[in-house]
Structures are given as C-alpha cells and as structure tokens.
Image 1 (cartoon, rainbow, N blue to C red):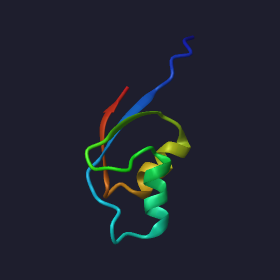
Image 2: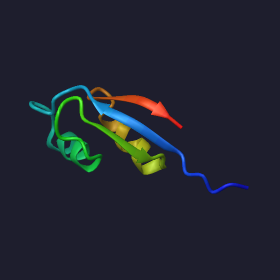
Image 3: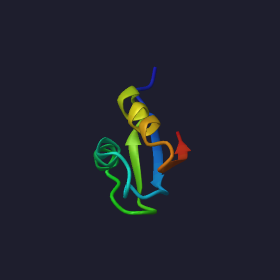
Image 4: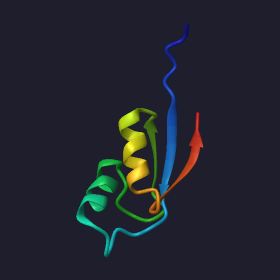
Length: 64
C-alpha cells in the first residue's frame, strides 16, 4: 500500500467582485486572489467542498 497523496490543480477564472462575501472568502481559503492564479492542493473532502462552492469561479486543471 502506498501513502501517495492525491492532489488537484485549480485555476481562478472568475472575479469575486459582486459575489457573496462567503464566496470571496472561500477563494482566499483556496489560496486564490487574482485571475489565472493556480494552486496545487491536497485532494480532500474539505477542499472538494470549497471547489464546489465556487465552481463558477474556478476551473479544475489536473487531478492526480
């Protein structure tokens, strides 16, 4: 059995301007604060929930 951690790469494609405050805070929690910024995050249920909440503002680039 391997302890290899799964990761997900996301890119911000939408602006939080005019969105609800919690959506803006979720983007900040994901480490995104400017358009086209990418982050590689550990693939956990919490991160998946955050991505789902702002799915209209981010794009999943790679899942590995």
